[in-house]
Length: 167
Image (cartoon, rainbow, N blue to C red; front, side):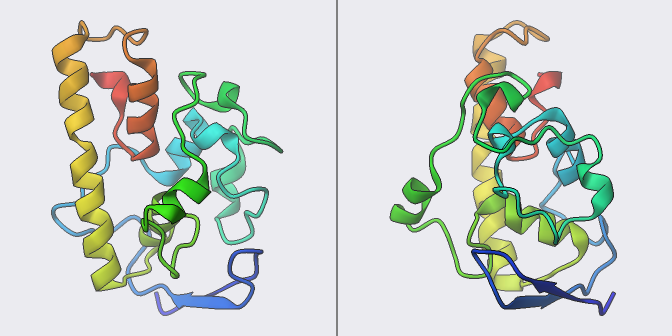
């Protein structure tokens, strides 16, 4: 705690933030993700290319077994389907903010590591909670444990730290 993280990537060439909470601890009580960022990367999310080969900010352990790719490759995803929209779509919709220009998963990685930005945290947690409806749709449409049912929707839930393999 109290560590300053200096970011030097193409999206934020001179950005820094402070870790004020222990890694993986002191989450908002309404934010209860099923998966850690490391688990998500190991399962396969965002076509393996979310950070576009700029991983310096992440703990090395998160990348040891991560399914990553030089390009966006749906086969790197757990369900081997494309369940992502291009970043430009998220930008056009106004869902991207300056502190996390890559989006929700970047926010979650930083939050997990211990960064706290109360206003942004509240906004992102509300977005995370809204995605929960997709789990209900899978429960309604699929037999329990049928991972072939609604694979794209299941992959999208993985992108938001919901473990859709257990539905």
